[in-house]
Length: 370
Ligand code: FAD
Ligand code: UDP
Image 1 (cartoon, rainbow, N blue to C red):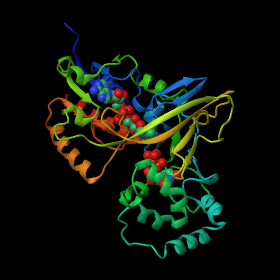
Image 2 (image 1 turned 180 degrees about the vertical axis):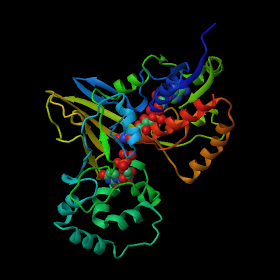
Image 3 (image 1 turned 180 degrees about the horizontal axis):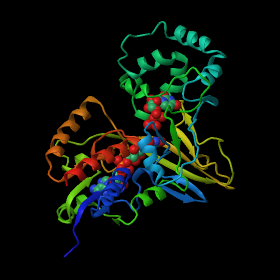
Image 4 (image 1 turned 120 degrees about the vertical axis):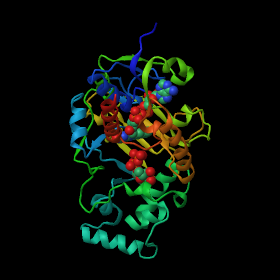
């Protein structure tokens, strides 16, 4: 007879790892399985040439929750990295997010009052009371010049469609500041775990059984027989055999290079905001940790149309997919002894801190009841 567990956790990403940690702390037995050959899910980092490489794209931890910040600090020490990406438009460099440095470079203005006047003047002709799409929202926020040079190309590459067809909310989360502050995030807590995210997740699941390269859905009945409860963090539509149809995603491809120079671009993240450059950004990993290695590793990130079988990255929360997800959510809620969580299980764009908060809250509820 195989050992049975209180919880089978499908997915060794942040949601699964946090849930497993909490359950195990409460005295429950857990088995984590993941179809990949490593733990960490999308926050996975691996050391190459002495540099922690973010395999699934740049991951910067930031949060406004003191509770979540204290929680992650149990498992890793964080450095003082502050995300201040640059935008490269046909060789012209601008600071992001949109702030006084950006406005000064774009228009030569030096005071907040001048910058506001310039934006006001730029949007006078096109202002709409209730923006219906991303283009209208962007011009309302920062005017036509910034929209044309720093938003349109990047956004259309990233989402594969016109800014007029995209929802306004995508751009709403980008800060616009009238101070000379290049910090991309407004959150009070920010940093990168020293030693990488993989080490942090490893510490979270210390002492818990883990089995990699194991696909739950390939033998669901067997895995279900191994535990009282299942925590499922894979795609919700796959769990239900796509019975209502396939939920759409945007995918990404990454192209990494080890270069014989100690500093390629002088910054961790440079966005390419013109339409002609095929990639959206270049990440230089060593700058996340103030690395002094003799070599460097860069990754070009390309946005890609997603088809079944590709790695799913960003849920497409348009009307069609939101409706489809609502149908799956009904099935998920009715499924006994299975908890659906995380960015794929809940079909949600979740930042790391939000996924941790969600796992903590769900674990606390489930562990109280069981
Ligand atoms: P995942 O990490 O995807 O984990 C799910 C796991 O389940 C995977 O390992 C998968 O292999 C496994 N799985 C799926 N199906 C099965 C199955 N059938 N059987 C077994 N295992 C299965 N957040 C931030 O806060 N800051 C950032 O800077 C940031 N940058 C990002 C950049 C990119 C390009 C992307 C895509 C996301 C970024 N995020 C960022 C979000 C962050 O990656 C997520 O919040 C986090 O990884 C979600 O964790 P999760 O456990 O829900 O999902
Ligand atoms: N964005 C942009 N230009 C940039 C960076 C971002 O127009 O140089 C827009 C784009 O529409 C993007 C949105 O802002 O989808 C959110 O950007 P963010 O970097 O927060 O998204 P992420 O790629 O990290 O999910």
